[in-house]
Image: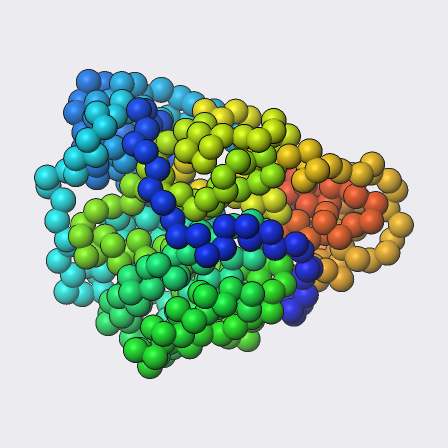
Length: 437
């Protein structure tokens, strides 16, 4: 796996840049899934008819890789049932009818933190997961026995349209600084690096201001090259360290946290209010009034779009996240999740695609890949169901950034095929383990 500054230049379309987040109207109903993170779904601890407040725990963590879930509104639990989320998975969800009051839970109080263990426990109880879109329970990153010398703050925000992290770095800079200081108190980092693409001048200025207040912080201005925000790419481009296939950032002495994740850690430590709302970018050619919106978790996308004036044309595609790695949603009733950083309603012009033709062996897919893998070869190996070749080609290294699909002149669905290849490889490995067992 060869790392470099490779990637692609894509249109930024940061239409909401400089727009501070505005709080939307209280929704009449929220539907909060139990699986808004990588790992095991949370376990519901409320029942139909229960009264809840903002910040009331409604589902507890179930296992090491899991995260608790809290009510984002005050009101009454109306239902607990399975829903289908955008990846086709059926998950349990709790529906709460809002009373419109947004009354905070009266048991909420700031946690007492006097040790590293207390800090990790606080991050766990906050319900915070990777807010840049990955959804990995954040406390697990800190609960490592590896020697960590560097905290990397991901402020790259390299996807088109999305500006929610940039807004957070400007409007909530003091919270980010507080979270850095608190974590450093218990981890004693050698340095803290905030990586930001060079086109985000306001965020750069804001983060340099907090760096002036805390000597361990370095703001590293990075080229505006997608996928600069990929975790392994960011580590390499800020520290020069390579996270090998199958390894984690902790294996090279790093913890990586999104800028919005850090701001929300600070909010929980200061107030005890867990993660109950998200700043999300609402944009796309079909949206009447693009905005950065503060939305309660569980709010339907329909309610969020209505707050932004609705649509000027029928959306051809609606996405969670950006156009490169985002996930298409089947209907507007799906909810805002913990890891939702944007919702896009794209018009016909933005979704127009060309006809797929035969591969011309130009090599652009490999040349643009930040990890230097060969998507065209992976596509052939997948077609042949050759798991051994997929292993040799490093199919599992792919981060599904979509650079290959974007740059391909034949418009082949390379990233999608890579995803299928990764699944095939995982299945074959599982079969081998079963045989050995």
